[in-house]
Image 1 (cartoon, helix red, strand yellow):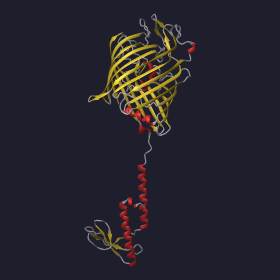
Image 2: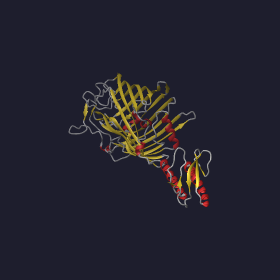
Image 3: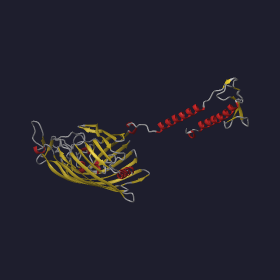
Image 4: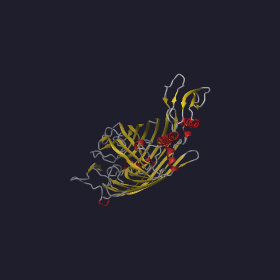
Length: 511
Protein backbone atom coordinates (compact mmCIF):
# COMPACT_ATOMS: atom_id res chain seq x y z
CA UNK A 1 0.00 0.00 0.00
CA UNK A 2 1.09 3.59 -0.69
CA UNK A 3 -0.28 4.99 2.55
CA UNK A 4 2.11 7.96 2.46
CA UNK A 5 -0.10 9.55 -0.21
CA UNK A 6 -3.18 9.49 2.03
CA UNK A 7 -2.48 10.92 5.55
CA UNK A 8 -5.99 10.35 6.83
CA UNK A 9 -6.02 6.70 5.79
CA UNK A 10 -2.54 6.28 7.26
CA UNK A 11 -3.66 7.72 10.57
CA UNK A 12 -6.69 5.46 10.71
CA UNK A 13 -4.65 2.42 9.77
CA UNK A 14 -1.99 3.31 12.37
CA UNK A 15 -4.64 3.60 15.01
CA UNK A 16 -6.10 0.23 14.00
CA UNK A 17 -2.66 -1.40 14.11
CA UNK A 18 -2.05 0.09 17.57
CA UNK A 19 -5.45 -1.07 18.68
CA UNK A 20 -4.74 -4.53 17.31
CA UNK A 21 -1.60 -4.79 19.35
CA UNK A 22 -3.40 -3.72 22.48
CA UNK A 23 -6.23 -6.16 21.85
CA UNK A 24 -3.72 -8.92 21.26
CA UNK A 25 -2.16 -8.32 24.68
CA UNK A 26 -5.56 -8.19 26.23
CA UNK A 27 -6.47 -11.45 24.53
CA UNK A 28 -3.54 -13.13 26.17
CA UNK A 29 -4.87 -12.02 29.52
CA UNK A 30 -8.48 -12.90 28.46
CA UNK A 31 -9.72 -9.64 30.02
CA UNK A 32 -11.67 -6.65 28.72
CA UNK A 33 -9.95 -3.35 27.94
CA UNK A 34 -10.89 0.21 28.83
CA UNK A 35 -9.91 2.46 25.84
CA UNK A 36 -9.47 6.21 25.82
CA UNK A 37 -9.15 8.76 22.94
CA UNK A 38 -7.04 11.92 23.06
CA UNK A 39 -9.38 14.78 22.08
CA UNK A 40 -6.54 16.71 20.39
CA UNK A 41 -4.48 14.08 18.56
CA UNK A 42 -7.35 11.56 18.12
CA UNK A 43 -4.99 8.78 19.22
CA UNK A 44 -6.29 5.84 21.26
CA UNK A 45 -4.79 4.77 24.62
CA UNK A 46 -5.35 1.90 27.01
CA UNK A 47 -5.17 4.06 30.13
CA UNK A 48 -6.57 7.41 31.22
CA UNK A 49 -4.58 10.63 30.96
CA UNK A 50 -4.82 14.39 30.26
CA UNK A 51 -7.29 15.31 27.42
CA UNK A 52 -8.36 11.63 27.17
CA UNK A 53 -11.97 10.58 27.21
CA UNK A 54 -13.21 7.07 27.84
CA UNK A 55 -14.52 5.32 24.74
CA UNK A 56 -15.76 2.10 26.36
CA UNK A 57 -14.91 -1.45 27.21
CA UNK A 58 -13.58 -3.71 24.42
CA UNK A 59 -12.88 -7.45 24.08
CA UNK A 60 -10.68 -9.25 21.51
CA UNK A 61 -12.46 -10.48 18.34
CA UNK A 62 -12.13 -14.13 19.25
CA UNK A 63 -13.87 -13.53 22.57
CA UNK A 64 -17.57 -13.12 23.19
CA UNK A 65 -19.13 -9.78 22.24
CA UNK A 66 -18.94 -7.21 24.96
CA UNK A 67 -20.92 -4.18 25.76
CA UNK A 68 -19.69 -0.62 25.63
CA UNK A 69 -20.32 1.95 28.22
CA UNK A 70 -19.88 5.40 26.64
CA UNK A 71 -17.94 8.06 28.43
CA UNK A 72 -17.78 10.85 25.84
CA UNK A 73 -18.38 14.26 27.39
CA UNK A 74 -21.83 15.77 26.93
CA UNK A 75 -22.85 12.79 24.86
CA UNK A 76 -23.87 9.50 26.47
CA UNK A 77 -23.79 6.36 24.34
CA UNK A 78 -26.72 4.02 24.82
CA UNK A 79 -26.09 1.18 27.23
CA UNK A 80 -25.57 -2.35 25.92
CA UNK A 81 -24.29 -1.06 22.48
CA UNK A 82 -22.85 -3.90 20.42
CA UNK A 83 -19.09 -3.55 19.71
CA UNK A 84 -18.35 -4.09 15.99
CA UNK A 85 -15.86 -6.79 15.12
CA UNK A 86 -13.01 -5.36 12.97
CA UNK A 87 -10.98 -7.64 10.62
CA UNK A 88 -7.67 -5.81 10.10
CA UNK A 89 -6.66 -7.79 7.01
CA UNK A 90 -9.97 -6.99 5.32
CA UNK A 91 -9.63 -3.33 6.29
CA UNK A 92 -6.17 -3.22 4.71
CA UNK A 93 -7.44 -4.77 1.49
CA UNK A 94 -10.26 -2.22 1.33
CA UNK A 95 -7.89 0.69 1.88
CA UNK A 96 -5.58 -0.57 -0.83
CA UNK A 97 -8.50 -1.02 -3.26
CA UNK A 98 -9.74 2.50 -2.50
CA UNK A 99 -6.27 3.90 -3.12
CA UNK A 100 -6.03 2.13 -6.48
CA UNK A 101 -9.45 3.43 -7.48
CA UNK A 102 -8.47 6.99 -6.55
CA UNK A 103 -5.23 6.67 -8.53
CA UNK A 104 -7.19 5.44 -11.55
CA UNK A 105 -9.63 8.36 -11.34
CA UNK A 106 -6.71 10.79 -11.08
CA UNK A 107 -4.97 9.31 -14.12
CA UNK A 108 -8.19 9.42 -16.14
CA UNK A 109 -8.70 13.07 -15.29
CA UNK A 110 -5.09 13.91 -16.12
CA UNK A 111 -5.13 12.12 -19.49
CA UNK A 112 -5.97 14.42 -22.43
CA UNK A 113 -9.48 14.07 -23.69
CA UNK A 114 -9.67 12.85 -27.30
CA UNK A 115 -9.78 16.06 -29.35
CA UNK A 116 -12.62 16.79 -31.71
CA UNK A 117 -11.97 18.92 -34.80
CA UNK A 118 -14.48 21.41 -33.38
CA UNK A 119 -12.06 22.04 -30.48
CA UNK A 120 -9.56 23.57 -32.94
CA UNK A 121 -12.03 25.41 -35.17
CA UNK A 122 -11.06 29.04 -35.70
CA UNK A 123 -13.21 31.67 -37.41
CA UNK A 124 -11.82 34.99 -38.57
CA UNK A 125 -12.10 37.32 -41.53
CA UNK A 126 -12.10 40.88 -42.79
CA UNK A 127 -14.29 43.32 -44.70
CA UNK A 128 -13.14 46.08 -47.07
CA UNK A 129 -15.31 49.03 -48.06
CA UNK A 130 -13.96 51.40 -50.73
CA UNK A 131 -14.68 54.82 -52.10
CA UNK A 132 -13.10 56.39 -55.21
CA UNK A 133 -13.13 59.97 -56.46
CA UNK A 134 -11.88 60.69 -59.99
CA UNK A 135 -9.56 63.71 -59.86
CA UNK A 136 -8.35 64.36 -63.39
CA UNK A 137 -7.38 62.96 -66.77
CA UNK A 138 -9.48 60.91 -69.15
CA UNK A 139 -13.14 60.42 -68.29
CA UNK A 140 -15.41 57.40 -68.56
CA UNK A 141 -12.67 54.95 -67.67
CA UNK A 142 -12.67 51.60 -65.86
CA UNK A 143 -10.18 49.80 -63.65
CA UNK A 144 -10.74 46.07 -64.16
CA UNK A 145 -9.67 45.18 -60.62
CA UNK A 146 -11.90 47.69 -58.77
CA UNK A 147 -15.46 48.52 -59.84
CA UNK A 148 -15.54 51.62 -57.61
CA UNK A 149 -13.17 53.39 -60.04
CA UNK A 150 -15.12 55.26 -62.70
CA UNK A 151 -17.89 57.76 -63.23
CA UNK A 152 -21.45 57.83 -64.56
CA UNK A 153 -20.33 57.19 -68.16
CA UNK A 154 -17.97 54.32 -67.37
CA UNK A 155 -18.65 50.93 -68.94
CA UNK A 156 -20.89 48.53 -67.06
CA UNK A 157 -22.27 51.24 -64.75
CA UNK A 158 -19.02 51.17 -62.83
CA UNK A 159 -19.70 54.38 -60.89
CA UNK A 160 -20.37 52.63 -57.58
CA UNK A 161 -18.83 55.26 -55.30
CA UNK A 162 -19.05 53.13 -52.15
CA UNK A 163 -18.24 49.48 -52.82
CA UNK A 164 -17.82 46.39 -50.67
CA UNK A 165 -14.67 45.06 -52.28
CA UNK A 166 -14.19 42.00 -50.08
CA UNK A 167 -16.19 40.33 -47.31
CA UNK A 168 -14.22 37.27 -46.27
CA UNK A 169 -14.80 34.59 -43.64
CA UNK A 170 -12.11 32.03 -42.88
CA UNK A 171 -12.88 28.70 -41.24
CA UNK A 172 -9.74 26.76 -40.29
CA UNK A 173 -8.55 24.17 -37.80
CA UNK A 174 -7.03 20.74 -37.27
CA UNK A 175 -9.00 17.59 -37.98
CA UNK A 176 -6.23 15.54 -36.34
CA UNK A 177 -2.46 15.36 -36.04
CA UNK A 178 -2.04 14.84 -39.77
CA UNK A 179 -4.74 17.03 -41.34
CA UNK A 180 -5.68 20.70 -41.13
CA UNK A 181 -8.39 22.39 -43.15
CA UNK A 182 -8.99 25.89 -44.54
CA UNK A 183 -12.20 27.20 -46.12
CA UNK A 184 -12.64 30.85 -47.19
CA UNK A 185 -15.73 32.14 -49.00
CA UNK A 186 -16.04 35.71 -50.22
CA UNK A 187 -19.48 37.27 -49.77
CA UNK A 188 -18.76 40.24 -52.07
CA UNK A 189 -17.91 38.56 -55.38
CA UNK A 190 -19.40 39.69 -58.69
CA UNK A 191 -21.17 37.38 -61.12
CA UNK A 192 -22.32 39.04 -64.32
CA UNK A 193 -23.95 42.30 -63.30
CA UNK A 194 -24.65 41.18 -59.74
CA UNK A 195 -22.47 42.11 -56.79
CA UNK A 196 -22.17 40.78 -53.23
CA UNK A 197 -22.47 37.17 -54.36
CA UNK A 198 -20.99 34.37 -52.22
CA UNK A 199 -18.18 32.45 -53.89
CA UNK A 200 -15.49 30.05 -52.70
CA UNK A 201 -11.99 31.46 -52.62
CA UNK A 202 -10.14 28.71 -50.75
CA UNK A 203 -11.17 25.16 -49.88
CA UNK A 204 -8.32 22.75 -49.14
CA UNK A 205 -6.73 20.39 -46.66
CA UNK A 206 -3.08 20.19 -45.58
CA UNK A 207 -1.80 16.64 -45.04
CA UNK A 208 1.22 16.43 -42.69
CA UNK A 209 3.72 13.59 -42.36
CA UNK A 210 4.96 14.28 -38.82
CA UNK A 211 4.50 16.54 -35.81
CA UNK A 212 7.12 19.04 -37.03
CA UNK A 213 4.97 19.79 -40.10
CA UNK A 214 8.02 20.32 -42.27
CA UNK A 215 6.47 18.36 -45.15
CA UNK A 216 2.88 18.68 -46.30
CA UNK A 217 0.59 18.16 -49.26
CA UNK A 218 -2.12 20.71 -49.98
CA UNK A 219 -5.00 19.47 -52.13
CA UNK A 220 -8.00 21.55 -53.15
CA UNK A 221 -8.51 25.13 -54.35
CA UNK A 222 -5.80 27.37 -52.98
CA UNK A 223 -3.32 30.04 -53.98
CA UNK A 224 -0.78 29.03 -56.60
CA UNK A 225 2.76 29.64 -55.25
CA UNK A 226 3.81 32.24 -57.80
CA UNK A 227 4.86 35.73 -56.68
CA UNK A 228 5.10 37.33 -53.24
CA UNK A 229 2.27 39.85 -53.67
CA UNK A 230 0.00 37.16 -55.15
CA UNK A 231 0.45 35.08 -51.98
CA UNK A 232 0.11 38.08 -49.68
CA UNK A 233 -3.40 38.41 -48.26
CA UNK A 234 -5.39 41.43 -49.40
CA UNK A 235 -5.82 42.22 -45.72
CA UNK A 236 -2.02 42.69 -45.45
CA UNK A 237 -1.23 44.37 -48.77
CA UNK A 238 -0.59 48.14 -48.71
CA UNK A 239 -1.81 49.07 -52.22
CA UNK A 240 -5.50 48.45 -52.95
CA UNK A 241 -4.73 46.05 -55.83
CA UNK A 242 -2.00 43.64 -56.80
CA UNK A 243 0.36 44.54 -59.61
CA UNK A 244 -0.85 43.52 -63.09
CA UNK A 245 2.49 42.07 -64.18
CA UNK A 246 2.51 39.04 -61.86
CA UNK A 247 -1.16 38.94 -60.96
CA UNK A 248 -2.06 38.36 -64.61
CA UNK A 249 -0.33 34.99 -64.33
CA UNK A 250 -3.00 33.35 -62.13
CA UNK A 251 -6.61 34.53 -62.25
CA UNK A 252 -7.75 35.32 -58.66
CA UNK A 253 -4.34 34.01 -57.53
CA UNK A 254 -5.93 30.55 -57.05
CA UNK A 255 -6.62 27.30 -58.81
CA UNK A 256 -7.63 23.72 -58.14
CA UNK A 257 -4.69 21.37 -57.77
CA UNK A 258 -2.21 19.50 -55.57
CA UNK A 259 0.86 21.16 -54.04
CA UNK A 260 3.79 19.94 -51.96
CA UNK A 261 5.44 22.32 -49.47
CA UNK A 262 8.66 21.85 -47.53
CA UNK A 263 9.34 24.24 -44.65
CA UNK A 264 12.16 23.47 -42.16
CA UNK A 265 11.43 24.38 -38.55
CA UNK A 266 13.89 27.30 -38.66
CA UNK A 267 12.08 28.82 -41.64
CA UNK A 268 8.72 28.15 -39.98
CA UNK A 269 9.84 30.11 -36.91
CA UNK A 270 11.06 33.03 -39.05
CA UNK A 271 7.82 33.13 -41.04
CA UNK A 272 5.91 33.18 -37.73
CA UNK A 273 8.09 35.97 -36.33
CA UNK A 274 7.66 38.12 -39.45
CA UNK A 275 3.91 37.69 -39.15
CA UNK A 276 3.90 38.38 -35.41
CA UNK A 277 5.74 41.68 -36.00
CA UNK A 278 3.06 42.78 -38.48
CA UNK A 279 5.53 43.10 -41.36
CA UNK A 280 3.07 42.25 -44.17
CA UNK A 281 4.12 38.67 -44.77
CA UNK A 282 2.54 36.07 -47.07
CA UNK A 283 2.11 33.32 -44.50
CA UNK A 284 3.68 29.88 -44.82
CA UNK A 285 3.74 28.74 -48.46
CA UNK A 286 6.85 26.70 -47.90
CA UNK A 287 10.54 27.36 -48.32
CA UNK A 288 10.11 25.13 -51.37
CA UNK A 289 6.85 24.52 -53.20
CA UNK A 290 5.99 22.29 -56.13
CA UNK A 291 2.55 21.63 -57.61
CA UNK A 292 0.23 20.87 -60.48
CA UNK A 293 -3.08 22.64 -61.12
CA UNK A 294 -5.77 23.05 -63.78
CA UNK A 295 -4.44 26.38 -65.03
CA UNK A 296 -7.71 28.20 -65.84
CA UNK A 297 -8.08 30.05 -62.54
CA UNK A 298 -10.27 29.85 -59.45
CA UNK A 299 -13.76 28.38 -59.79
CA UNK A 300 -13.14 27.53 -63.45
CA UNK A 301 -12.98 24.06 -64.93
CA UNK A 302 -10.09 22.82 -67.03
CA UNK A 303 -10.59 23.37 -70.77
CA UNK A 304 -7.83 21.34 -72.41
CA UNK A 305 -6.94 18.35 -70.21
CA UNK A 306 -3.50 19.89 -69.64
CA UNK A 307 -2.12 20.58 -66.16
CA UNK A 308 0.07 23.54 -65.27
CA UNK A 309 3.22 22.91 -63.22
CA UNK A 310 4.62 25.46 -60.75
CA UNK A 311 7.69 25.61 -58.50
CA UNK A 312 8.88 28.21 -55.99
CA UNK A 313 11.93 28.60 -53.75
CA UNK A 314 12.10 31.32 -51.10
CA UNK A 315 14.28 31.96 -48.07
CA UNK A 316 14.01 34.50 -45.22
CA UNK A 317 17.28 35.73 -43.71
CA UNK A 318 17.48 37.41 -40.32
CA UNK A 319 20.48 39.62 -39.61
CA UNK A 320 22.12 40.30 -36.27
CA UNK A 321 20.14 43.52 -35.80
CA UNK A 322 16.84 41.64 -36.27
CA UNK A 323 16.26 42.83 -39.85
CA UNK A 324 14.46 40.32 -42.11
CA UNK A 325 15.14 39.94 -45.82
CA UNK A 326 13.47 37.42 -48.14
CA UNK A 327 14.29 36.47 -51.71
CA UNK A 328 12.36 34.15 -54.03
CA UNK A 329 12.50 32.62 -57.48
CA UNK A 330 9.47 30.95 -59.05
CA UNK A 331 8.05 29.82 -62.36
CA UNK A 332 5.25 27.88 -64.01
CA UNK A 333 4.43 26.32 -67.39
CA UNK A 334 1.34 24.94 -69.12
CA UNK A 335 -1.26 25.50 -71.85
CA UNK A 336 -3.99 28.12 -71.45
CA UNK A 337 -7.31 28.51 -73.31
CA UNK A 338 -8.68 32.10 -73.12
CA UNK A 339 -12.37 32.90 -72.80
CA UNK A 340 -13.85 34.92 -75.68
CA UNK A 341 -16.68 37.40 -76.15
CA UNK A 342 -18.01 40.10 -78.48
CA UNK A 343 -16.21 43.44 -78.38
CA UNK A 344 -15.99 46.82 -80.12
CA UNK A 345 -12.87 46.84 -82.29
CA UNK A 346 -10.94 49.30 -84.42
CA UNK A 347 -13.10 51.46 -86.67
CA UNK A 348 -15.88 51.32 -84.03
CA UNK A 349 -16.91 47.96 -85.49
CA UNK A 350 -18.67 45.21 -83.55
CA UNK A 351 -16.64 42.03 -83.47
CA UNK A 352 -18.95 39.02 -83.21
CA UNK A 353 -17.43 35.69 -82.22
CA UNK A 354 -20.33 33.27 -82.91
CA UNK A 355 -23.71 32.80 -84.56
CA UNK A 356 -24.90 33.83 -88.01
CA UNK A 357 -23.40 37.31 -87.58
CA UNK A 358 -19.92 35.99 -86.72
CA UNK A 359 -17.21 38.05 -88.37
CA UNK A 360 -14.09 37.09 -86.40
CA UNK A 361 -12.41 33.87 -85.35
CA UNK A 362 -10.36 34.89 -82.33
CA UNK A 363 -8.66 31.54 -81.68
CA UNK A 364 -6.99 29.93 -84.71
CA UNK A 365 -7.24 26.17 -85.11
CA UNK A 366 -3.64 25.53 -84.02
CA UNK A 367 -4.38 27.13 -80.63
CA UNK A 368 -7.66 25.36 -79.88
CA UNK A 369 -5.92 23.23 -77.25
CA UNK A 370 -4.24 26.23 -75.65
CA UNK A 371 -1.42 28.74 -75.93
CA UNK A 372 2.01 28.44 -74.36
CA UNK A 373 1.68 29.91 -70.89
CA UNK A 374 4.95 30.04 -68.99
CA UNK A 375 6.75 32.53 -66.77
CA UNK A 376 9.69 32.97 -64.45
CA UNK A 377 9.78 35.60 -61.70
CA UNK A 378 12.07 36.92 -58.98
CA UNK A 379 11.04 38.60 -55.71
CA UNK A 380 12.98 40.52 -53.05
CA UNK A 381 11.54 41.92 -49.83
CA UNK A 382 13.39 44.05 -47.29
CA UNK A 383 10.76 44.12 -44.55
CA UNK A 384 9.81 47.54 -43.09
CA UNK A 385 11.85 47.68 -39.86
CA UNK A 386 11.19 50.60 -40.11
CA UNK A 387 12.22 51.21 -43.77
CA UNK A 388 11.31 48.58 -46.32
CA UNK A 389 11.64 47.77 -50.02
CA UNK A 390 9.63 45.28 -52.05
CA UNK A 391 10.24 44.41 -55.70
CA UNK A 392 9.18 41.70 -58.16
CA UNK A 393 9.64 41.14 -61.88
CA UNK A 394 8.57 38.43 -64.34
CA UNK A 395 9.07 37.41 -67.96
CA UNK A 396 7.26 34.88 -70.10
CA UNK A 397 4.86 33.84 -72.85
CA UNK A 398 1.10 34.37 -72.88
CA UNK A 399 -1.91 34.51 -75.21
CA UNK A 400 -2.45 38.08 -76.38
CA UNK A 401 -5.18 39.80 -78.43
CA UNK A 402 -4.04 41.58 -81.59
CA UNK A 403 -6.59 44.26 -82.47
CA UNK A 404 -5.05 44.70 -85.91
CA UNK A 405 -5.84 41.12 -86.94
CA UNK A 406 -8.72 40.42 -84.54
CA UNK A 407 -7.04 37.22 -83.38
CA UNK A 408 -5.51 36.00 -80.15
CA UNK A 409 -1.86 35.27 -80.86
CA UNK A 410 1.06 33.80 -78.97
CA UNK A 411 2.70 36.77 -77.25
CA UNK A 412 5.40 37.67 -74.76
CA UNK A 413 5.39 39.75 -71.59
CA UNK A 414 7.58 41.38 -69.01
CA UNK A 415 6.95 43.64 -66.06
CA UNK A 416 6.88 44.09 -62.32
CA UNK A 417 6.93 46.71 -59.59
CA UNK A 418 9.03 48.41 -56.94
CA UNK A 419 7.56 49.60 -53.65
CA UNK A 420 9.15 51.63 -50.85
CA UNK A 421 7.53 51.84 -47.41
CA UNK A 422 8.21 53.07 -43.89
CA UNK A 423 6.58 51.85 -40.66
CA UNK A 424 6.32 53.97 -37.52
CA UNK A 425 4.16 53.85 -34.42
CA UNK A 426 2.84 56.40 -31.94
CA UNK A 427 -0.10 56.82 -29.57
CA UNK A 428 -2.51 57.04 -32.52
CA UNK A 429 -1.54 53.65 -33.96
CA UNK A 430 0.72 52.27 -36.68
CA UNK A 431 1.38 54.23 -39.88
CA UNK A 432 2.91 52.90 -43.10
CA UNK A 433 3.33 55.42 -45.93
CA UNK A 434 4.31 53.85 -49.26
CA UNK A 435 5.25 54.67 -52.84
CA UNK A 436 4.71 52.08 -55.58
CA UNK A 437 5.61 52.06 -59.27
CA UNK A 438 4.47 49.27 -61.53
CA UNK A 439 5.15 48.49 -65.18
CA UNK A 440 3.71 45.81 -67.44
CA UNK A 441 3.90 45.12 -71.16
CA UNK A 442 1.91 42.01 -71.91
CA UNK A 443 -1.66 40.75 -71.67
CA UNK A 444 -4.17 39.81 -68.98
CA UNK A 445 -4.97 36.27 -70.14
CA UNK A 446 -7.72 35.83 -67.53
CA UNK A 447 -9.84 38.67 -68.89
CA UNK A 448 -12.18 38.05 -71.84
CA UNK A 449 -10.21 37.79 -75.12
CA UNK A 450 -6.82 37.96 -73.34
CA UNK A 451 -6.47 41.71 -74.07
CA UNK A 452 -3.11 43.43 -74.37
CA UNK A 453 -2.32 45.66 -71.42
CA UNK A 454 0.45 48.18 -71.03
CA UNK A 455 0.70 49.62 -67.53
CA UNK A 456 2.83 52.45 -66.16
CA UNK A 457 1.22 53.42 -62.82
CA UNK A 458 2.37 55.34 -59.75
CA UNK A 459 0.66 55.00 -56.36
CA UNK A 460 1.34 57.20 -53.35
CA UNK A 461 -0.50 56.27 -50.18
CA UNK A 462 -0.58 55.57 -46.47
CA UNK A 463 -2.08 52.89 -44.25
CA UNK A 464 -3.20 53.76 -40.72
CA UNK A 465 -3.72 50.83 -38.37
CA UNK A 466 -5.93 52.48 -35.78
CA UNK A 467 -6.17 49.22 -33.85
CA UNK A 468 -5.82 45.53 -34.58
CA UNK A 469 -9.44 45.41 -35.74
CA UNK A 470 -9.54 48.66 -37.75
CA UNK A 471 -7.42 49.97 -40.65
CA UNK A 472 -7.83 52.98 -42.94
CA UNK A 473 -5.81 53.50 -46.12
CA UNK A 474 -5.79 56.13 -48.83
CA UNK A 475 -3.78 56.57 -52.00
CA UNK A 476 -3.38 58.89 -54.94
CA UNK A 477 -3.33 56.64 -58.01
CA UNK A 478 -1.93 57.89 -61.32
CA UNK A 479 -3.05 55.38 -63.96
CA UNK A 480 -1.67 54.86 -67.46
CA UNK A 481 -3.07 51.60 -68.82
CA UNK A 482 -5.62 49.87 -71.04
CA UNK A 483 -9.32 49.64 -70.28
CA UNK A 484 -9.91 45.89 -69.98
CA UNK A 485 -13.64 46.09 -69.18
CA UNK A 486 -15.81 45.25 -72.20
CA UNK A 487 -18.76 47.34 -73.36
CA UNK A 488 -19.32 46.68 -77.09
CA UNK A 489 -21.06 50.05 -77.20
CA UNK A 490 -21.26 52.19 -80.38
CA UNK A 491 -18.96 55.17 -80.18
CA UNK A 492 -16.75 53.49 -77.61
CA UNK A 493 -13.88 51.25 -78.79
CA UNK A 494 -12.93 48.55 -76.29
CA UNK A 495 -9.44 48.08 -74.87
CA UNK A 496 -8.38 51.70 -75.48
CA UNK A 497 -5.63 53.27 -73.39
CA UNK A 498 -6.38 55.91 -70.77
CA UNK A 499 -4.52 58.31 -68.49
CA UNK A 500 -6.43 59.21 -65.30
CA UNK A 501 -5.88 60.12 -61.66
CA UNK A 502 -8.00 58.94 -58.74
CA UNK A 503 -8.19 59.24 -54.96
CA UNK A 504 -8.94 55.80 -53.51
CA UNK A 505 -9.93 55.25 -49.88
CA UNK A 506 -10.47 51.97 -48.06
CA UNK A 507 -11.80 51.09 -44.61
CA UNK A 508 -10.98 47.57 -43.41
CA UNK A 509 -12.44 45.67 -40.46
CA UNK A 510 -10.53 42.68 -39.08
CA UNK A 511 -12.53 40.22 -37.02
